[in-house]
Image 1 (tube, rainbow, N blue to C red):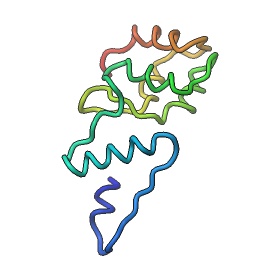
Image 2: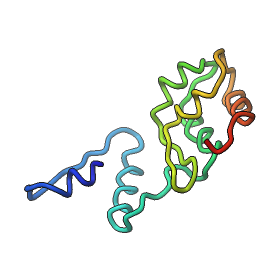
Image 3: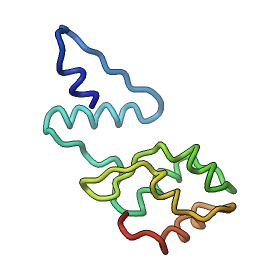
Image 4: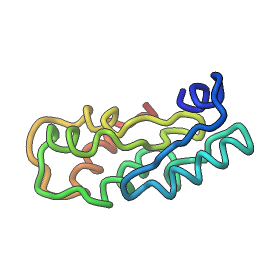
Length: 116
């Protein structure tokens, strides 16, 4: 874990840099972790709806399963309050083919989602 690498060792100062759009949220989450010992949730809810939340930010449709995995799969979502997973965990459950909209993706996964 990054926190352990930064906290341990024989150095006076360590710097962590956050990049891209989510840098402010990530930095704030790390600050909360350092103060409380627990990371706050990444998304506003748990289950399947966080996938819709993160895909709605910048996913372009129509698209394929493979393109969603390669372009969006790195994003973290809160599957449960205590379990964070990459979006790819859920996206891999999609059938092969083209999806016209975010609603199509969520509709297909709704039938397959069991709190993975």
